[in-house]
Each structure stands twice: as structure tokens, then as C-alpha cells.
Length: 212
Image 1 (cartoon, rainbow, N blue to C red):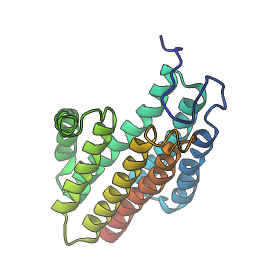
Image 2 (image 1 turned 90 degrees about the vertical axis):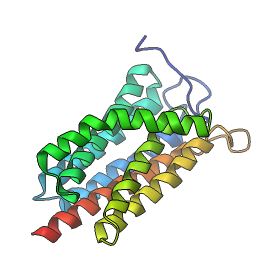
Image 3 (image 1 turned 60 degrees about the vertical axis):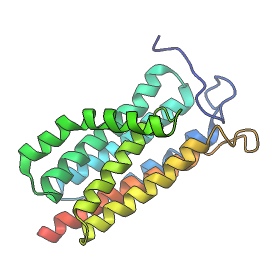
């Protein structure tokens, strides 16, 4: 079961290791982003953890776009989930100043929130699939940005959400443009997400250093 291979993207036409060369290579964007952010995160443990997970996201996604197996798919999505959960905890604890209990509460509510919003988005736009989950995450960032409106942190979060929405558009367009553009558009999801995740870390760093 876990070794079963799947074709999930426009660029892949068979199960060869390098059947998705552009999708595979553009995962370097995550590693580059992590390398840039690592020295900036020095002295801020939460940010360092996020940078570490950012690098793992690149590795996991590379495995997915080369092996195309179900276990590699898990290696792709789990680091993304870990990044989201760490950031959600940090944002609730620090940005909203709700402390450890508030951060834990946000984590407890995350799954039911995503399930409900993804379901609603699926009703509005049928066939979204996993894109509805990412849409729910983008909306959550918008919510936090609006709560913090009028602050540099709030503006930073809204910028991050904007980049994620654009990135999600490229992810959704992959199959639609396949006939005209055989490599698809999924590679832009990698590049823009690397920029967006690095920016989200930068937003957190600027907030933390503003307190010191």
C-alpha cells in the first residue's frame, strides 16, 4: 500500500525517478529559504524550529516528486502540518498574547476548524480536494492578520496570506493548463511557498525582536 505509486501532477507521465524534474528541482527553493533564514533566526528558538522544518519540507517534497509513492506523499504533507502547528501556537501565544493555554487551545481547535472550512469551501467550489485545506489555512492567516490590523505584524500576515492565495492558484491550475503547458504550474507552488514560509518566519522574528 505505502509503496504504491501515483501520478498526481501534470509533469509526471510515468513512474521514473526524474519524471518530474522541474517539480523536483524547485524544492531547492525551500532549502535556499531555510539557509537564508537560519542566521536571521539565531537566538530565537521558535524561529529556529520553523527554519528547521522549512528545510525538511523541501526534502519531503523532493521525495514525493521523485518517488511518487504514498509513503513519500506522507513525507511531503507531514512537515507542512508541523510548520503550520508550530506557527499557529507561536502566533496565538505571542501575537495574540494568549499564553501557553491559548496556544494549546488554538492547536486543539485547528483540526475542527480546517475540517469545517474545507467542507464549506468544497461546497462553494466543488472538486477543490486538498486545495480546500490550504485555503482554510490561508483564511486563518487572514483572520489573525485582521485581528492584528493596524500593526506591522498584522500587515505582514496579510502579505503572507496574499502570497499563499496566489501560490494556491498555481497549484489549482496545474491540471487545467497541462495540455498547453506540459510541465504544469505546480513548480510555482514550491517557489512561492518557499518565499511565503520564509516571510512568515521573518514576520515572527520582527515581532519578537520588537519586544526585546
